[in-house]
Amino acid sequence: DDNNHNNKGRAWSKRSIARRAFQSLKSKMKKPMAYLAPIALASSSFVAVPQKADAGAPVMAMPKTKAQDPVQNAFDIHERKMMVEAQKELSAFQAKAKQIEREQGPEAREKYEKEYQEAQKKKAEEWKEGLIELKRDLLDQGIDPDLDIEGRRQVILYEKGVDLGAVGGTAFY
Image (cartoon, rainbow, N blue to C red; front, side, top):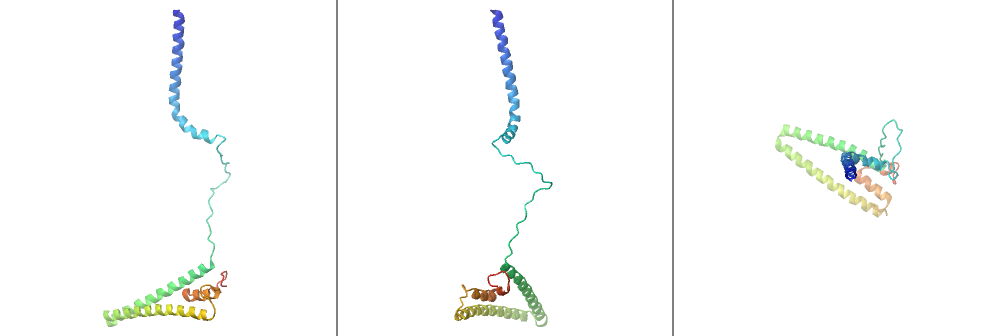
């Protein structure tokens, strides 16, 4: 019996040794298994894997081109011209103001600047009155300045300085 009991002890110790070795191996494998989990998921049949690309260069998105709006292009060109003219006018005003200050003194320059500002205000008021007069004239001719295409063209010409009837690719052409 002692022999039999001794054999059971050996078997038991062999089992416990095997269990301890398995636990040790399992604890050592936990970290690498955590890193292998995404790879195992990616290689499963549930996840779609893209095909290998055979391109020789990186694939880059083509820049989106904006559709050219002929109306906006005409407005932009005219605005650039008007900016150049306004800069010339301002330079001429400043040069004349400096000349007046040199010749007649700072009081004369201030008077000139006030007169210039008043002239600019008067010009703006005349412009507003001209727009109202244009709309009235169009209505007298039976042309609606807001709905009729010819009325809109004439109002835009007055307001923006661009005759869209001469710009190809527009509804006014």
